[in-house]
Image (tube, rainbow, N blue to C red; front, side):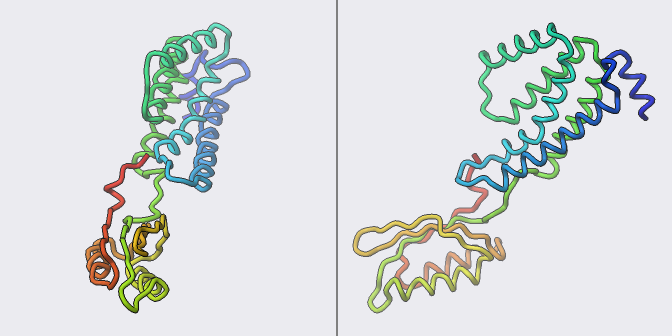
Length: 233
């Protein structure tokens, strides 16, 4: 296999760059891309998490590795800067994944234009496999909750907040593996508005949770929003 690649690369590589080195650069960049993306996933906080951006972090080192192997001369480097400047000022891409495909196409065009056909073929296989891997494994997705629960509560007779809160926790624990209080607001007349993120034990039985809360004393309004109904940023 390496013999075939050696013949394919031909004069693509500099004297100090062999087919084994080129393959090592691309594969190692792919592995390091995992590390960068995983750290982003594990350390990200807030509501602006994007699975697309996590995938872009994985693929970007491979693209940069390809570009650096191609920049063997000042002429190639200046040509790359001109192409990147044209794309930067004439196109607005809303998805980072789209940007990766643009960079991939540019790098492949540079490889073919400089007659480095071996690197072009090798990189297309590695990057194609990377994007297919992202597609089939849904890399970067985080399933932390199924539904968002929103409810409004008001005191009723002997049932105050101190007595009602344990009842709510009991209901949520029966239906959810994990419940996280996302927000809490004080309304008029001692009423409270709560919002929870729930990872349900059985997502198919979410209507039972909704019905039980609607029948609970003090609950004036309750709504359940499924995770699929929310657009991922």
